[in-house]
Length: 567
Picture 1: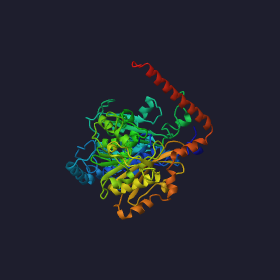
Picture 2 (picture 1 turned 30 degrees about the vertical axis):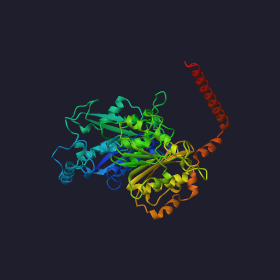
Picture 3 (picture 1 turned 120 degrees about the horizontal axis):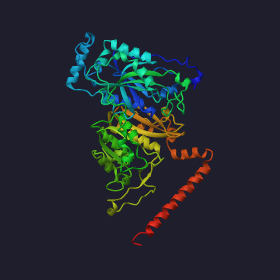
Picture 4 (picture 1 turned 30 degrees about the horizontal axis):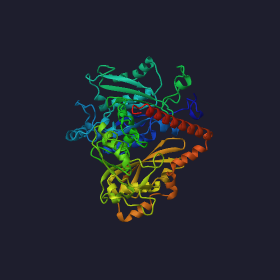
């Protein structure tokens, strides 16, 4: 109930938001999931639409706060575009039909409209709705450290010669509206919410107020500190719904006011329709649908892209690439996984369930990609994959343990399953980056996942390649000791075949030491678990439970066999 770091409420100060009134500002609200992925996904989606950070848009800093842990958990980002981008890189969802445009901006607006007439660009909502982690986007009209300061910011916008165009588009008697108060989990009475809305009564929207079927939804957001789970760090009410005065008196981190874009405050409502639970064919390493969608955004996969997954498995990543409109090509060394369990339970059956174009699947070995396919010219727009690391499934490559393997008889060649041998993680990664450098087009992206323990240093221990530039590293904690990183790389130079050996030798900055940190993860987890108190008792209990389950299955099988009509 006290302020963090022992400071009093009065000492808890905020800085004013540096919003520019002559630019188009958006407030992006993220779902409180995969927090480290938020900025990377947002920037990748904007770049895919021709907008680069620092050139075509800027990220406006939120009110400063010394506690970095709080900053990392804040689910909001403000992005700012030049007004000249309207009609060139994106369109407004409401057209400005009034003629009394200020002379200072008339020529710019006319140029934008002319460009829009030639090739109408998508709206901002259409662009950002691709983000799997974006919950909603609001056209930001004002922001401040208090409600009063936010209201003054909105007043300033309505008086600004450029900024008032944003407000004017909505001032029509034909546009119905509602105003929502969003307090991030804190509860306020109707009277309290009404008092907050009253601060913005000066806007005087001429349209009809509607709770449903409205044209525009305006939102006032009171941002507070959240914990790691996305709940209020200092709840306004206790478990018995009693008011906590100390927490209630805490000032907000910021207050925002704007207009919701895209017609909804929850853009993620339809994401569950791609859930793994709704697919007929799964495996122990099938990638979660949400993470797969994020990977396709980091890889800038779009309609017409040619995508490759060299470790396709059950095709979970390929399926999300196909959802983006890409042509998909996948390979795997295990032909049994590619074939599936039957006609209605395989990779292709999953694609049929979503009415997607079937992928091209080939049984091949990524370790010898250059012997399977032509690699003298770039081919793929994106390579998106989850390489095998031996946690659930070990990596394998073509070969035999025997010095002189027995040749395959002619009559068995049709259904022969080739022999394989262990594939060291260091070689898995070196080969993956080498194939990406060979086959990606310039600007094409490689997106992969790499698990690691707490001793992993991303700056030193990630594999590298001279033809690839590191773009994003996003971390997802899984356990206390284990996490995984989603790594995005972009091809920046053509591959030089004469330097292949040098490329492979330089894959790991610290050689075997770096490679070892992402190898044998399963063994390392067991070693870490053995050091915890009570491990032996828990292990013995799990063994007994597994044994009892096995015996119960055997008994059920015998009973079924004995009760069969044939017996």
